[in-house]
Image 1 (spheres, helix red, strand yellow):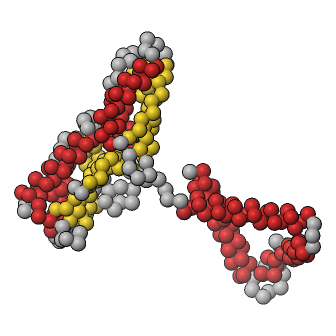
Image 2: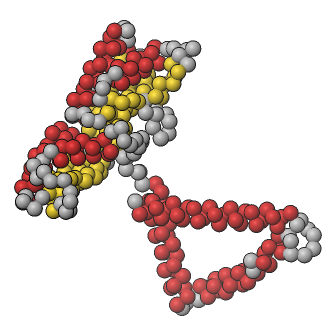
Image 3: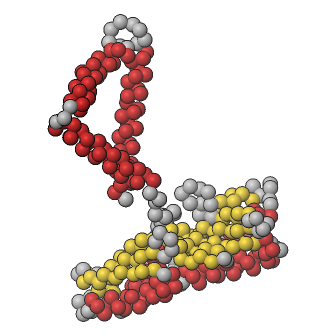
Length: 196
Length: 115
């Protein structure tokens, strides 16, 4: 998730840079061979390409000999390689389908989106004695099934472990039938919420 | 107005599924690809795919209407109705597997298709 976000950001920044560079080259190309700064050599002078060439030349010269520069450069190279590999993983790693496959047979497949399952799970959990409100998050599995994270608010008179057990039982028709794993977190309900 | 065996089967399946009170409608999805053209009409939420054995697998992408009981029970009802409806129009011989996907739930207050 984080890698994918970084890949998106890096891609966006690189594309913007590419677009700006292309635009600058296109604009300065209009100048053709006319004298002045409004041509490609002028653009090179503007972005100090000559200085950059000298600096790179110095760096390459330092790299040839032993010393700290060579070590630091090697480390930077390795870091760049690692970063590149991470970005590749972020870009190519298959995205988790937001669909929960509930049943697959020769007759067909039964699948549901997270919202549908969350709604069903919420309705089942709210039927539990002592539960005043629920919040359900569904995380699809890579192949089949998935995980339900249920936060069950309860009243002060209820014991959290009893609420957890009862909610687990209430969710059983969904979790057992479709191979879903439920994690129930009982929480003392806020003041003013529905009282069961 | 072109209507083929495949598109007719898609229509029959979608109509049978959406006739259930617990099914609000079919949806085309974010990419808008879950649809089949039949007789000049776009049927949203159904895809019929040809198989090598000359049958057609039917995929239904549905919005469930809240409240409903078991998803499994609802999917079973959908499949039974589709098979019956296909039988009534002599298309049961070409009906393959029926995939049911519940893409969203309609509670009459909000809709967020393709979550």
